Length: 214
Image (cartoon, rainbow, N blue to C red; front, side, top):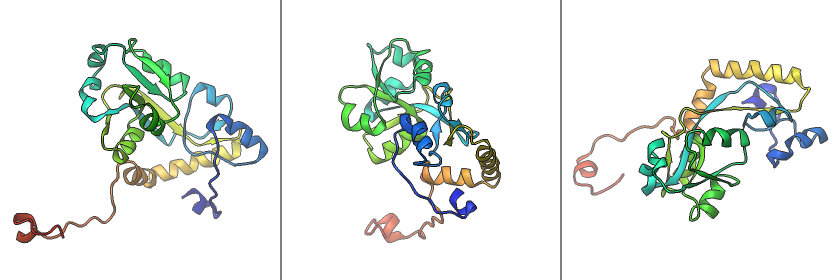
């Protein structure tokens, strides 16, 4: 949507978040995809206003969902070990109400599922991320009650000193919030809402006799 409104083409290039400021300095890229804002990262790069505020969640095995359904249930666990991405600001907040939890840094929810799920009890992440990964891996689920009071602001990172570009993008984000674009994209990409869904007419053969799924 941004590229379309600017009349330019979009080119996606790989980058490591921790190296984003140096990639800006070399001109390798012009801006980053949406990233959580932390005090540490705000010292390295500039940010637009947030366009989303993500809720905290725990990604865990589906059969263990009740163990993480509340702070009280977590406190009953014996030294639970949870993965978390390397964001110290949110690590501190995650520990505020659950001091018995040991936090282990992992790269991402995908890294947790593929490499850590047998060693860790779950992973602290966002509802949006956990829900998406649980769709790809149904034996996992997103428990949203534990850290639902935490909001993680997400914005576009840009090179420091690019105030004019940041001002423009702030206005652009406001426009996209006002015309419903951000909400539509969220419902489609995060909540999995499909456009133009049409249910087939009721049928005895399909709905009663179950002779066909068509």
